[in-house]
Length: 119
Image (cartoon, rainbow, N blue to C red; front, side, top):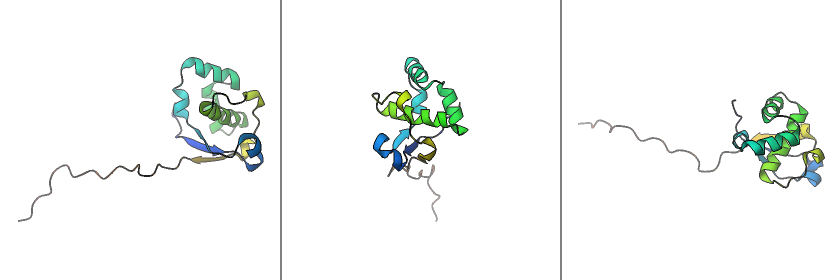
């Protein structure tokens, strides 16, 4: 399975009172690295497999987008409300790539051999 890079999302302003206005990170790599029983608990809660959620979200299914927002919040806060009570307007969620961390740029590599001297 090819994993998507981490994304962040924020709920529509009409959902801020219920779900907050902060950005939340959705990271497939972190999700698939969970122990099997924790993944099974998530799958029971959302009513589909994690693989199905990932695939369906890439096809634009609202139930998968709903599950992704809940899963991301659950990974950030295990005490998030039950999925059965989770009902934001998922087609109006703002999704974007995570900004690159400041100063996280590799310096250029030095030359592997000294430059020839000019004589």
